[in-house]
Length: 343
Image (cartoon, rainbow, N blue to C red; front, top):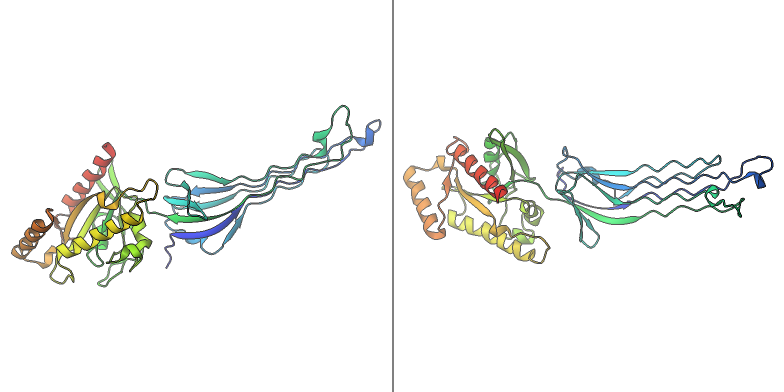
């Protein structure tokens, strides 16, 4: 599986290079005079957002990453070369946490963040020369490196999350409303990674949708694809909750809706003490009946009426295969996104 959304690594900055003890050869100067240069600074550890990445796969194959050490100073007052920084590229939306799972930085808010500073280079003996101490034989060793265990956790950045049970048509919908080309097949869990697509409604009005892999009962405890992908909808402003309205669906619409809604509520309970967490069950949503091309108008209306009577919600009805009401859904999604931004 090439989509990796969590890694645990150890990072280390570079240590400062030692200063140099050296004396130049010159007549009438005590011991030639000090000319030891300073050591170079150690490299920093920098987290940098790379918009071309959509996974943490590149960081999966190593557990330890180190910046370069500063080089020692030398004679003739030459400073040592600074150590090269360690730059870790991560996708947008990556959280950086310490070993106790406490948040250090959310890279949704930064393009670049210096996680660890490299050690300062030590001063050479030239630095210590004074009018009364003209031949110092001391130099600093250079400051030590910093080391830290961290975890990187990716949360997909999207305006709208498309959620629902497996095989309800989420991937087909995203392929119709955007240029995304997700894998589509007729079995559960076809989608094993969140797919992102940009939806263009009109000039200057675009938004990002995420097709979240199918959730099942018990997802909040890790069943199915579970918590691995529930966290990817934490950043979304609103949901499109898709329900398979066809007669082939294993769950009637009301049951399917309640099942996913209950999982969101239970996930909220798990996260209730997390700082800055916003309940998923409180997000605005558009409830959509999919696969209506398989039903007669009369049969569809009966299902819509039953759903509205049980939940108080009137669902939109669409067919991604024949394109029915797809444009209307796009505009409704756009209204939700830009309404949230205006507020």
